[in-house]
Every structure is written in C-alpha cells, then in structure tokens.
Image 1 (spheres, rainbow, N blue to C red):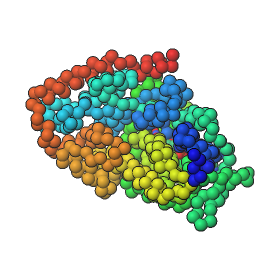
Image 2: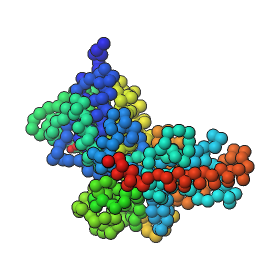
Image 3: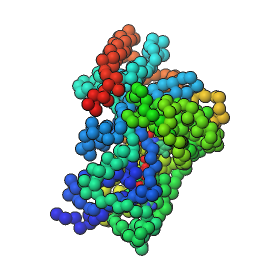
Image 4: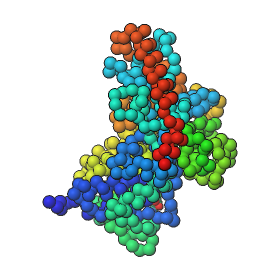
Length: 502
Ligand code: FAD
C-alpha cells in the first residue's frame, strides 16, 4: 500500500565520489523497498571534484558486491590494484619501518587473540618479531597477491584486502550505473537555497540559470564547501587541528611503477608524511604536511624528490582543517563525504566514512515526518566513528620516537583525547585493546601500530598460561612455516592482475 508520508524526492548536491556512492545504493535499495522517490543529483563541472582519494579499506568490496558490480570490470574500469595494508616508513624513527596489514597475527587460541600468546612468549624471551605471523605482511614482503581461500582458518585465508583505484574513474563508473538505475543528473551551479518558513527545512536549490530543484530530503555531497549542512543549516564544526595540525597537501601523479606493490606506502617527512599508491595506469603520490613547520616549496621539493617514477603533472595544492561536523544530519539535510568532516588520509578512511554514512542513512531512512530521533541516532554513530578514527590517526604521531624535528617533538608530547590516552595506557599496562567503535579499526590494527612503533606492554593476559611454553613455541613455529610456504605458492601481484585482465 502506498505510504502517504513516503519521501517523494531526494536531492543529492555534488557529483564527486560521495555523491555517486550515495546515489546508486539509494536508487537500488529504495526501489527494492517499494519506495521509489525521484533521485536527482546536481553537480557542477565548473566547480569540479577534489580529484584525490585512491586507497580504501576492505569493506569497499562488500559495498561493490551489494551494488552488483562485476569485480573484474570494476578493476579494469578504475585501473585498480590490490591493497593488503600500509607500509609505514620513518614513523617510529628515521630508518625504521613496519606494516599495518589487513589481518590478524594468527588465528585465536582458546578464545584469546594470537597476540596475547605471542606477548607471553615475548616476555619469556622465546619468540621473534610479531610481524612474522601476519599473512598480509608476508605477502607484501614477497610482492604476492591472491584472494583468500574459503575454508577453515589457515595461512591461506588469514587476511583481507582492499583496492587502490582512481576515485575519479570510480565516480564515473558508479554514475553510469546510477543513471541506468533511474537517477536524474542535473548539471548546474547552486547559487541560492530556499527554506521552508517555520522549521527552516531546505525546500529547493536554485541554480545559476534560474532553474529550481525541489526535494524532501537533501544529501549534501558538496565537498569541503559543505554548502547545505554548514552554509545553510549551520551544523557547526568541531576543529581538531590542535591534535592533527597537518593542514595542507600536495598531490601529483607519476608514471606507472614497473612492479606494483600490493600495498600503500606512507613515509614520514620532517613535518608530515607522503603517500604512494600504485595504480595500473599511474602512481598516485602526495605530501600531507603542517604549514606551521614547512613551507609549500620545501613540501613540493621533498615530494618530487621521492617519486618512484617521473611526475606526469605539477603538484596540486589542497588545504584542509581536521575535524568533523558537530551534526551530520540537521533537519532534512544529511552530509556525506568531505562535507561531513575531514581526517588526513593516513589510514584511507574517507571513502569508508562515505560508505558507512550511506549505509546508516539507508538504515535510518526517514519519511516526510523526519522523526528527530533518526537524525540523533545517525549523528551519534557518525560522531563515534569520526572520534575513533581520529584517535587511531593521532596514535601514529604520538607514539613516534622521532626527536629530530620540532614538528615531531610537538606531536609526541601534545595532550591526547581522553579516549586515546586510556587506550594507550591500557595497552602499555596489559596488552589489551579497548573497543572504541565496534564498526571501526579492530584489535589487530591497534596492535599493528603500537607494536610497529615499538610499544611492548608491561604485562600479558594471565589466561595465556594454560598452554605449556614448548607447545606454544611449536604452534608459532608451525604457523610461521605454513605462512611462508603458503605465500610462496601465490602469484605475484602483477601476474594476478594480468591474469584478471586476460
Ligand atoms: P568532491 O569531490 O569535492 O565533490 C564535491 C561535488 O560537489 C562536486 O561534484 C562539485 O561540483 C559539487 N559542488 C560543490 N559546490 C557546488 C555548487 N555550488 N553547485 C553545484 N555543485 C557543487 N579518501 C580515501 O578514502 N582514501 C584516500 O587515499 C584519500 N586520499 C585523500 C587525499 C587528500 C589530500 C584529500 C584532501 C582527500 C583524500 N581522500 C581520500 C578523501 C576523498 O578524496 C574524498 O572523501 C572523496 O573524494 C569524496 O569527496 P566528495 O565527493 O565529498 O567531494
């Protein structure tokens, strides 16, 4: 039966990665749910998109699958490569590096994490480096890739993977599917926003050529401009630059690498860090830095000096402030993408924030009564996610032992958010990890960064003593052998990509 309160029209403002990542699932899911409001996306070629954002987290695979995208076609269309994690160079100390892989350090033992048992043996002086039990780390070391096998836990499936892709090509690919699913695309620049008297809800967007785009629900994907959520609804911005002072980036493409590593590389610099993302047709490179400690010329010089292949363009500057919108949903406006906030791309979390916001919007989809607790719940979930990612990113800076630059000395010693101070103290004392966000980075990720930065907890889990030390050493030795042996049989990342393209 027709619901008289159902949304009649949804307007998405912005056709960047966020706009099209919102449009397609909305069009598909709403139709399946029996509601079929018109979905209209307004974008302006003149304004353009941010044009960066190439590394993702494993849930992007489930997002693509939920949209019915063909994996091989997606990889071809977006020039994607596989990502097993991130290599961090010079973060703990200049010359040191470690790997944050998508996977645990072995299967759990008697309901305790493998790490808990590793830590016990470490305290007994009876085991080597933790990274030796991470399957994605071994795959990255050997430059190999194949998807995990189905079946019981083993070295052949103790990892996950994500993609590196060209976000512009991804948006174009999703746009094609969204248009086929009935989304209406309108090219034009929004110059004015009309609001309803009384509740102040947005009622229409007015375009430069005089056209009006009316709607019931407005999704603000206008990027850093945050035209509706801030410009009109004044949601407020929680500024986190006192914790994350990097405020500029330079992005530059360079030629394709001869061999594509199946991971992102992040190298710390005197006042920030660089990224290197291998794609099939080019390499994405950038430098995130703090303008209080480094000028733009020096940032560009360091970026260009570290490129793996010759630059194919000049560095493009981007400015930002770390923080989040106080409310991502106000009235009938929901912010998705850069309009909802920004955290530096150190752990590739922006596209993840988009897909989670879209998922939550679908879970909490309002009708035209806009019951306020739906917005409150959306805002609660987004705040928790932003804060836990913020803490995870600050962790990389605060644990650094670099003493060679004023930037690093300042970041090492700054006061921390209470949640992160608790997390670090808990880990240092006991090797345990607090769950700050059940949907966010899990224990293996926190352990990978803390261990990679050289933190060895003082105590270990007392419930790991049920197993005799020799038996435990045997278990870890067999696991290490299985990991090395299994990974050796995997194809190289390049060979796997070539086979997929054939
Ligand atoms: P945009 O791409 O800026 O799109 C905004 C849209 O709004 C455009 O279509 C524009 O035309 C439209 N618009 C704006 N104003 C108007 C108007 N008045 N009228 C009509 N249309 C309008 N994310 C990751 O997940 N991984 C990464 O590795 C990563 N790296 C990044 C590196 C840097 C330096 C930066 C800054 C970001 C990075 N991100 C990364 C984030 C990622 O780029 C964004 O999250 C993603 O591209 C989404 O952007 P968006 O769609 O919100 O905004």
